[in-house]
Image (tube, rainbow, N blue to C red; front, side, top):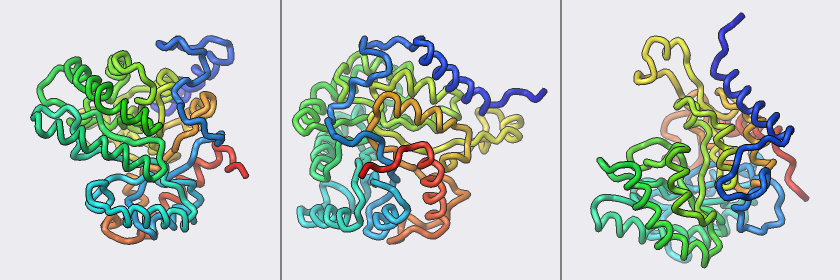
Length: 340
């Protein structure tokens, strides 16, 4: 009899959650809303299903490839060009026209690096918050309903103090703007010094101080696998706060892990969906069951399907395109077809 592995653990966890729901035994919800129904979506769009998307820097060729590969939308990160403080009105109009010509939607934008919402330095903190307000306005102009970010970080500060500082910024600075623009926003759970709140224990504290559901999560299940947190059960527990999804997988390389340990290096790596440990049918079932209609955006960080220098090119190299094509082929089997 073989020893149960990480894949078995994830599948059992997902199956257990599904079985519990079938029996009417569902996790309690802090907001008291009926189980199996999300209360978080202020977007009354008639679209019924999630939108399969890909994360890409802006360029006409990359948007055209996304459409050719079958994706419905793109998620565009801020960079040296794609920035609300650098683009003219004419350039923004051109971006929108290019998306229309490519028959691709800009699902959301990502405003993460260089925006520390709770920086210790008062000037940096003030500038970051003002810039994020401009990002919300920029996303609205592009037709987005969601803007992704990080939570920020205060070096040396206790987690509870960081939670309180971020909650104040959200409630006082960001929610009034998001209400006015009918926008949602939230952090990706990528663990790094400028993104302190990336685990369920801190989310619970943060959401308790920010009851408004316009603030939620850009949920990436891959980051939980390497922390040995079940991404399926966690998604169910926070289903009413998931506003956007990153589709990325994680592989655990057991021979290296057994020698290097969890504090070593090289024992895990990101993969395209379907080539790691995540139980995608179970994860997508959670999203479909709660009526999630946001973007499921492939985040390609898989070196196996890639070539160096792609970020500086107008178009992707074929190796990277192959990764996106395979990811679309894998994920689309679990999602209903686009409505006519």
